[in-house]
Image 1 (cartoon, one colour):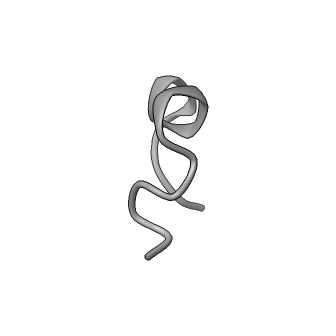
Image 2: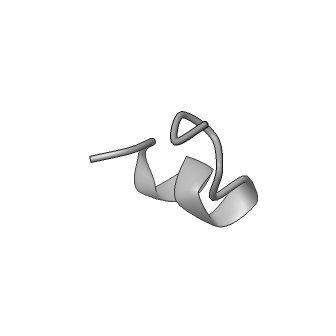
Amino acid sequence: VGTPLFMEVAMPLGLWV
């Protein structure tokens, strides 16, 4: 999984990049 849900909404690319 990537970032926490709130982070997914704020910046979807958070830890994915």
